Length: 201
Image (cartoon, rainbow, N blue to C red; front, side, top):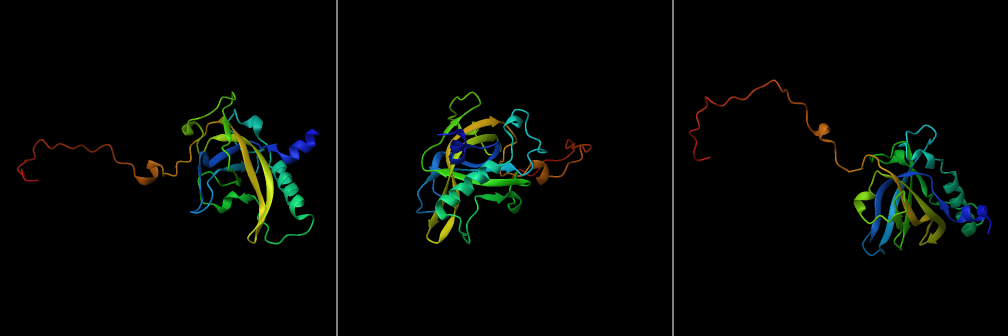
């Protein structure tokens, strides 16, 4: 099989920021559904001008290969005919009010089998704190088209993951600086002359 054929059926993604990683234990999205391993991948819309961490920059590129992979899966399933209501696996992060999504595309990938997860040295990662929402990674993925219960679209199957570098974590919490105002540090509290006669507090 030629390299070009391999690339269009199974690819290694460019660098992406990890969001909503559920890759150590399977989880069902809704009650009654089969549990899966899944992740959201955030790809900069303009990788040429994006400020990647130094150790991640060499893995940066646009997502044209993902789009070609999705297009091939669509054609294999539906042929060249126009399919109305087809769900696109590549979505606009500006539509989401989440940390880190502005200026990004977001792409879901999932699997019923646990993905392998390794670090930059290809050593297995087993601690979820080492592969967290906000870090950088890349993945091997496949694409498949579906036509189920009136829903048509293309999705990505997750195979394996590699940690590429650290970044600010997406904690879901507000920064303490956003919750409190600065307190004037020039005041003093001297209670030495106050009487403490309320013994029944």
